[in-house]
Figure: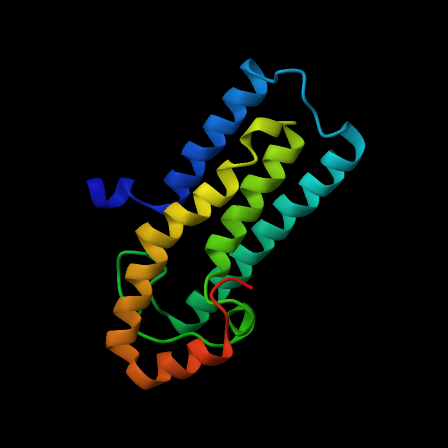
Length: 150
């Protein structure tokens, strides 16, 4: 049961709840400015969703597991995975940043690097270790030509 609770969307939801509570109950009179924050926030959320959909399509195309705690059967290096080894996690971070902007949650901005740190420690590093053991030289070459985030 804990394995299914310890998933990136659950972590994202937890960070979003903290940001929303801060924006709703503790705004401290701070704000980004409605017009540009709404526009940029919407673009970030949309971009994050687009990254996630593009990555999910590649997982489906290669018929391999998208579940973070499982080792994929194939190493995906096409599509969005040519640009980032972790487009889904990057999409999650963009969604968090976008909603923080849209909600005017200025004090929640530090949540973005904290979220990335949590995701990297809980998911990215263990996943990359499993893929390094499974795909060996193919994964090493992939890491040389594709950055972890962008």
